[in-house]
Amino acid sequence: MFAKRMQRVTPSAIMELIKTTAAGDFISFASGLPDPALFPVELLREITDDVLARDGRGALQYGAAEGYAPLRELVAGILRHRSLEATPEHVLITTGSQQAIDLAARALLDPGDRVLIETPSYLAAIQTFDSYEVQYQPLETDAEGIVPERLPEDPGGAKLLYVLPTFQNPTGHTMYRRGREAVAAYVDRHGLAVLEDDAYHDLRYEGIPQPPICALTRSPWTIYTGTFSKVIAPGLRVGYLCAQPELVARLAQLKQITDLHSGSLSQRVVHEYCVRGYLEPGIQLFRSTYTARLTAMLEALQAEMPDRVEWTRPEGGMFVWMMLPRGIDVDALLRQAMERGVVFVPGATFHPDGRGQHTLRLNFVSADEERIRRGIAILGELLRGTIAGS
Ligand SMILES: Cc1ncc(COP(=O)(O)O)c(C=O)c1O
Image (cartoon, rainbow, N blue to C red; front, side):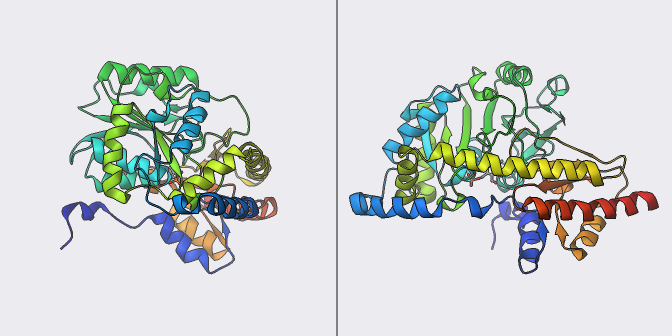
């Protein structure tokens, strides 16, 4: 009875791994989850209480599809700081930025349409595009994201570019201004739509913020997405997109038939959290904790990994990407690692074209420094054995 599109809706390898390892005491480099110890539970409890006391009926009532007006205004202010043209009419509050990706894909893509996508890219976006039965035009990337010189001369009828230029999930790569400008010029030349996913924007540990590609192109078909998941808590499910008001209006109509609107209470709680000045100190806490963990992981990799193993050195975000010598069986390595209590995600999962067989993704924020060092020591030992025997 399933619709044809369900053929391309498959289980997420990451979710399956997380389920398998949930019961045991695994050192998990696999998940994409922030550290729950950093969630501002007490502050959110206090704020929720105040919101309900002050405006309980509004907070529990249906709301506008576009989002809670004061939150739209607040997000517009945040986005102007990121060099985007943003008034409240440019902002649509979404149920996590995952919904923004889904709305953009659903609004713009017909079955068979072609999407330009980095290889590798964010798994849940690939799964979203899959569900709309699209085709891919994979784009080559290096340590600075999309390689402008390697963009296809002819985008092959592609309609949309999906891009994560900042602390990319899964590689941790960041594109610098020159690369972003070149990609924006390519978008303009070929009349493409852009979906720019900036979920990790505030998790920067070094370097300076780069302008969004959406701020550099002249295309009216730009959708920029962001989220409070990584800087407050993902369970609130409050994200946003920024686009031209006419496009926001159309996407709001689509959102309305999806979930009517995002949670009225969550939106007010996020708004109040920001208005009370908690956002910036909260971001600082995420940053300092994650910086220490990234440092621990990079030092452990340096100390433990054999020659010919390479990895990225991200300026922010949550992930380090490892490249093993060709011929290493990453699935076999995962099985061995799991026997030793360590879990990671094989890199092929993140490739829309089945490449990446010799790569893997490590989350560096879930485990503390001591467990990171232990986990990397185990992976190093396994890899030394595997490479020596290959
Ligand atoms: C790159 C990227 N985009 C979007 C999301 C979606 O996050 P949320 O829906 O919680 O905003 C994630 C979550 O892990 C992500 O890694």
